[in-house]
Each structure stands twice: as structure tokens, then as C-alpha cells.
Image (cartoon, rainbow, N blue to C red):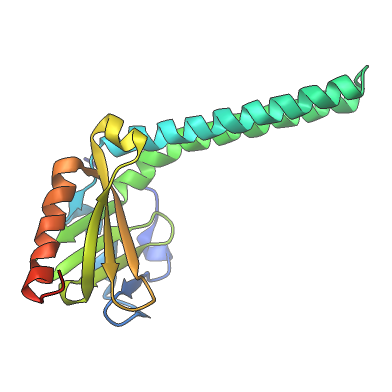
Length: 201
């Protein structure tokens, strides 16, 4: 997969690392984040994540559009015959819905390409962000428990969300969406091993 030319990393500010262990933002070495896209040790989300995000966005646009149509219809009936201002409102509404529909279709593959993660004996790292990039580092000794969740669309496409609960208040719940069911369960078991060693569960 070729790296998308979305950002000129030389002209952007240095990203921050959000570390659950220290609950403080620090500035890592520049190459740590700017080169994550090509790091072979980092894993990508499941490609089906793009479709689930698109379908969820389309459903939201459809619901908003239906509600707006009913409100507009009631307004037209209450102010019949409509004037030129009514046509302007309809045109603006159609333009907004079209723009939002384009966004929910075009953005998921971009977000997918710029999200990576790595799980190891040390813990879990999540790299993400298109314009503002960040690294969330969850050390295993800070993990209290883990969950694997599925919504209706996720079940339809065989995906799951890994939820990691950590000690402390900042970043107390870390979510990694867009994992296949098997991968989410494997990550949960990997991170849970530390919980069992520490006697947490």
C-alpha cells in the first residue's frame, strides 16, 4: 500500500504522545510518529472497518435527512404557497446533506490508512491521526481489565472493539475499533495474561 500524500510532515508541528502510565504529554522523537505508516511492526485495522464506518455514516445521514424533510414539509404546508425563500432553504438543505454524505463516504478510508497499533509484552500502542497525530501508549502493568464489544454493524461484518480500562483518571478507557473478532479476542487474552499474573482478575 502506498503512503497517501496527505500531510507534509516537515511542515507540521511535532505530534504528542499520550502515555497512560505517566498521564502526561511528551514530544517523542520526530521519526517515531512521522514514519509509523511504513513500520512493518505495526498492524493495520481490518479493511472491513471502512465499510462499517460508511454504513453507519449513511444511516445517520438518512435519519437526519428524513427528519429534516418532515420538518420542511410541515413548514411548507403551514406557509403555503411557499416563497422564493423556501426554495433557497431547500437548496441549502440538499447541499448540506450532499456534503455530509460525501464526507461520511470519503473519510473512513483516510482514517483507516492512518491508524496503526502494536501489542506486545510491554503493552498496547495505538498510532492514529491524519492532521493531528498522536500515540497512545498503554503499559501492561497499568491495565486493570479488558473488554471486547460488538454493535449490530460490527456483528454484521465480523468486527469487534477492544476496550482497555487502565488505572488513573486520564485515558482510563482506551478503545481500539475496527479489529476482526479473532484479533480482538487474541489481544484481549494477551493483555489479560498480565492481569492474571498480577492477581487483578
